[in-house]
Each structure stands twice: as structure tokens, then as C-alpha cells.
Length: 487
Image 1 (spheres, one colour):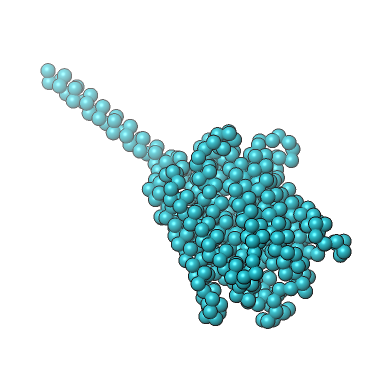
Image 2 (tube, rainbow, N blue to C red; image 1 turned 120 degrees about the vertical axis):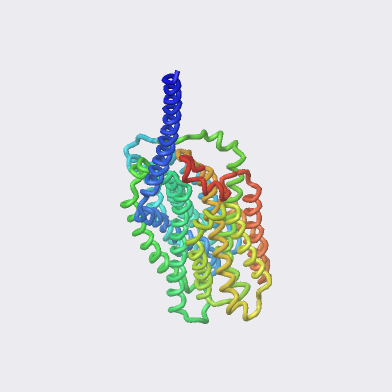
């Protein structure tokens, strides 16, 4: 009887020990998986992150010239009308808008053509780089052979180069953006890559404005304003920034290996794909598109119209058209260094609202600022607020886009194409309407910055607040290391 009793006790002890051992093994295995997962996504070297970041510098310097100085160059150097300058910018934006979904769709395809062995993303990046370098210098140069031809012949001449440039620009942009979800599966690292990418965007803009200031300020001093005599100076600026962008593109193509990066960082063991129809019938896609479009409207329209506001409303000298945008992007750069940490700590929604508050504050100040103290001192504070607010909302909106893509990296380029389509169309239509409605009043661009740009960033904030995506909360960020899924 007693022997049976001890056998029963021993059996129960063995069962308890087995359960305890199984529990410990599960815990150890889970910890091992977590450690292995952490090790996998942390293998993205810092050199690779920097090499990825410089891959968009050529696009960035061209975009800075395009948005900041295209209207200035055509309006005040080539003496085009307000409507003509707005129309040319619209041509570019429409070409870009149509090119982005096209490039995105074909970039997502797994083509067996021999050229695509270079990388389905990088081959489009390379093609776009050649188009940008071949077309962009002609946009900021006098029309060849158009000495006696004015009006539509000149418009057609510039439109050809603008369309080629915008196709190339879209190819570089979409292929570069769609590499983010493939280089790393981790949401934090994706935000970090986006932030690094934006850091180089800001550095590129700062570089453009420094070069522009040096060319305009050293040649003309403090009293000159932009005029037809400045045509050769714009060509000096163009060739300077294109040289830097070309070197950065070479670094990107030499250092970033698309195939190797994808295979080494994809811890999920495969990629998911969603049909185009399913994407186009998903409400969340349009919510994210509205957020991205509103963010881009604020950033691009402020970049376009602040130089015109300085020239026409505040009657400032030519060098200020470089110094004020330079200050704006210095504020943007400093802010971009902390965006990833702020997103991680506060989440997407709160971070975006902070950016909105800064942007709206700047718009209100622009509306009511007009005395000499404002033009000599406060305009620089306004520029910092515009830069900081734009940096926050743009990086956060790109982070929201990568959240939408999630594991489905095979659709990444097409999703970015949809976002960019809404952005380019909205910007192009807004600019041509604004330019066409331009009255004789010198306060026109002040009101555009206050109401249109301020309204755009408010719409973006409302779209973020009422979006149905739940991964933007702080809790989701904190749980990421404990799970294999990060979305």
C-alpha cells in the first residue's frame, strides 16, 4: 500500500517536472526567437543606411530647384506670364503623377529579363537617374533656337524636357522608397531609414540654398533683385548640384545590394502580395493617400511660394531667396534627427499633431507679420517653424505608408505610386489655379501661405486623427520586440 502511494507521488512529481521543463523550454525558445529576430533586423549596417540615404540626393537637389526656383526662373528671368509658369509646373506634376503608378506597378513585377537581374528596384533607379541627368539642365537654360519664337513653341520645348525629367524623377523616387520595406522588416528600422532619407533630403536642400546664396550674393551683393541677367547664374547652380547628385547616385548603386539585403533581412520567410484591385478597393489606402497628399501639399507649396512671398510681398533682395529657405531647411534637418524617437515614444498620431501645431503657428505668423522687425528677425523664426512642422508631418506620413505596406513588400512600389499620384496631381492643380488667379495685390502670396498651406496641414492632421489604423499607438511600438509581426 505504501509502495503504491510513493509510486503515485513519484508519477505526479514527474508530471509536474515535465510541465515545468516544457514551460521553461517554451520560454527559452521564445526568448531565443526574440533574440534571433532582434539580431536579424539589427544587421542593417550603418554604412548601408547612409548609402541608402544618399540614393535620393540627385532627386532631392533637382526637386529643390524645381519647387523653389522654377516659377522664379521662368517668371523673373525668362519673363513668362504667371499662367505660363503655372502651366509648365502643372505639366511636370501631371507627368510625374502618371509615371509613378506605372513605375510602381512594373517595379513590383518579378521580371526574368536579363537587365532585371541587377535588381527590380535598382534598374528603375538607374534608368531614372539617366533621364534626370539628361533633361534637367535644359529646363533651367534659355530655349535653344527660340530667339524669335515666343509663346507656345517655347512652352512645347520646355514641356518635352519636363516630361522626360519627371518620368526619371518618378522612377528614382518610387524605386528608392519601395526599397525600405525590403531592406528591413522592422517598423522602427523602417522609420529610421525614412528619417535618414529625409535627413539627406534636408541636407540636399540646404546645399542647394547655400550654393544659390553664394552665386547670387557674391556676384550681386545685397541690393540686387532677381532678373533676366541671372540666367547664367542659374546654370552654374544647376551644374554644381547635379555633379554632387551624380556622385551620390554612384555610391548608392555600388553599396546597396538589393537581392542580398532582401534575403538577409526578411525573417518572415516570404513576402505577401495583394492584388491591385484589392488595394484600390481598400478604404485605408485612400485614408493614407489623403494624409500623404496633405503633408506634401504643405511642404511643397511652402517651398514654392515662400520665395515669391519674399520677392513680391516683403520686397526682399535676391540673396534672401536663398537665406530664408536655407533657414527653413536647417530647422527641418534638426527636427528630422529626432523624429524616429518621437514616433517611437508618442506614436504616429500625436507626432503628426505636433507637426501640425508648428506649421499652423507659422502660417498664422505669416498672415499678420509685416513690419521691419518681422522682415529682419521674426521671418527666420517663421522659417524654422515651417521647416520643423513640414519635416515632422512628412516623415510621419511616410511612416504611415510603410505601416500600410507591412509584410506585402511585393506591392510596395505600387502603393507608393498611388500616394505619389495624389500628391503630384494635387500640387500641380493647386499651383496652376493659384498662379492663374494671381491679382495685382502684393499680399496675394502671403494669403496663399496662410490659408492654403495652413488648411492643407490641418486636413492632414484630421485624417490622421480619424484614421482607423491602430498601429500608431505607443503600445504597438512597445510590443514590437515581443512578436515576429511588427504591424
